[in-house]
Image (tube, rainbow, N blue to C red; front, top):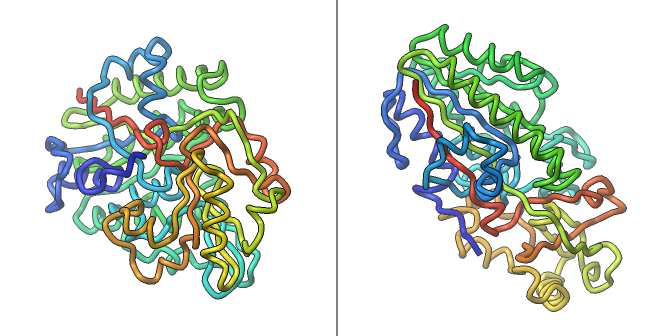
Length: 371
């Protein structure tokens, strides 16, 4: 088990260090050097161990590898990591503690990635994630925050929860994104630009990390990083990181069809590598025992209290967010995926998964390039 290194070696520690590098009075736990402009290249799914396994397909990134790496946070999934990067807070502080989360008092779950909620009135992103973002703090200090990403994400619930305060610059292709980043960096002496690439993660989910399509995407990422670096204005710094790593599942268990995993369960949240199991009233202890016995050595299965006290979500979890965490949290330690095919058939058919506390999913790179 790799409990995230909150407080000096996690994604939640990177945003403050980037602002400190820009001269703002923020903590700098990663000891980043000063810069007039910073660009954060966020590659969805680029785990550090995955990158280390294929340096020949990413020569530019391999040339800039160091021993510095970060832990994603728990769960190691996009919505949690993006919110940690957007707020500088741990999951227990910002409350985005998983992909599918119970909305207390509704009997329904919010999909925090697609921002869909079948339980009634829409969920307001600013209420669900009320913490100020690092981009709002940067803008208030005279540093222009810019986010370059596909147009389809602009204005979504997740974007509103995570990227409040940025100037959103839509860009579809790699060429467009590289050009928009360079324009934004040159436009202002003090700027904070984030550029996102998600196709590597998609390839990993569908075909598995290390497969030919994943390797082709890794080559695209490497070339994009090289081009971003080549166009940096003087005084700039480029940082490359990721939101999580990935494993290829070698075993799957259908949590909807195994009686021991359904008895006493009201809702099955989270995702296949980080399950939030919400028990029916009075059944939490029974569900915990059944999940532990059924999954055995294949997973870490703990109560909500045990997960919180073990620091999985950070040093503390805010009281309002506790009910978002499952009564039971089930986290595979082998290459197991705990699926729910009838409700989530696409996810159940994946090859690659992430979310757990293994090093392959937790470790992400932190590469630095300066002109």
